[in-house]
Image: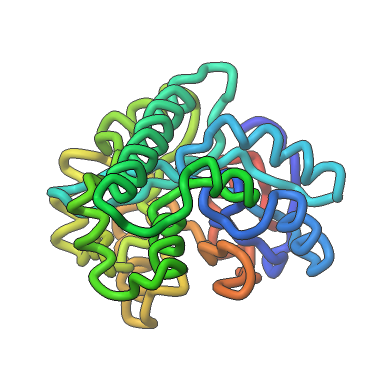
Length: 280
């Protein structure tokens, strides 16, 4: 490794998964970075979904506030039809392979959202037009925005079935393609919230073995709010046994939901070392 660009104490506060309005977060990058600066975080990663290009701007905004930030993004994928998110850290923006995948995925997602909403209007759902949504200062960034408009219109049950019948589908990229692009761009690639479930992949050790035979990821997000104490122990032990990198993230999307979490830097020591951050 080259000389580190940042040195942290073992108990320094880090959070390596957070989101802003660049994807589906509830606060802007400026608001998030103001918050973590005020709370004394030493290092953060803003991992907006499929928004590789936004990382450079986030890093600039962090530098203005004295907050060290990693170049990072969370890429949308699937495994056997179940959602799977992959965290990519430390890519070289100039190489652009990962950015191209993220842009392609995001473009497909936004097109599908617009098509789904237009179909709902044609089906007779009493919702504001897309122009009215924009005039109110809103936008259709993800399926939760459509769900919120349906609830606002009085449709409170069966929302999943409603949007599915209107043509909604998850737009993702193949996990092996994401991993290859991450490595091409100098990044490391980890499984986000591997124990989450709730519509996302929920791994145990045998499932991780099977997945890694096909997609040899670099590590796991061991600490995540959705993980039980038993899962944290399982994933930490698995990472040690197989020499995998470990990350820690709150998955914060802003108030009033999950807020950033101060994880001690030493938990992610090896990952941070790969990214030029020394934890003494």
